Amino acid sequence: MSYIKRNWSNIVILMVIALLAFPQTRLPIQVFVQRLISFSPSEVELDERSTISDYDWNLRSTQGDIVSFKRAEGKVSLVNFWATWCPPCIVEMPSFQRLYERYGNSVQFYFVSSENPSVISNFLKKKGYTFPVYIQIEEPPSYFAVPSIPKTYLLSASGEIVVDKTGVADWNTSAFHSLLDQLLSDESAR
Image: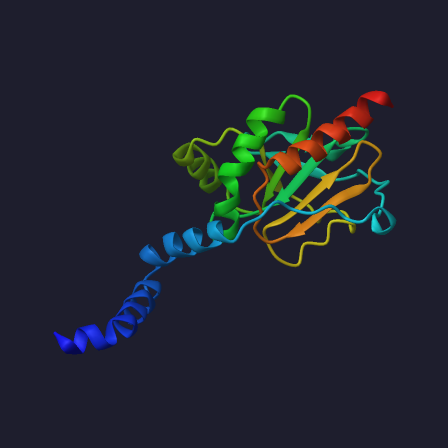
């Protein structure tokens, strides 16, 4: 008994390492830890923002329809690159779902993946997500630099990249709602 008392922290660390060795337990642990460290994304400084001018990019819906990104032109849009196997992506999905439920009628949402549509559909159904997902059928425009996922961009109605976030974030915060409300107000004033 005294051995366990003296070494309890080492035993816990070894148990966590052992759990991380198995994919069935690794993913939930990674999701839990990522959720603890996710914060609201920050804006790109005004003088550092780039503006997109080319909306020529085609995607495919999970139902197989070709969708042009040109419909985002002149509208506040959120573009997220993700995958079902990516723990940080999985962490973000609940906050994106709540954000979509709140802003789905006023913001253009593009959740973009390169995975098989049936894998994506099964994932969405299992989790109860209703946001629109698109399959990448061609390379994204150069202004969408996606070195790793998750990668998320928030575009203003004038095409400015207002948020450029790599990694996990909590998208359903009052600070992000305020930013979206301001961008939507600017859009309606145009």
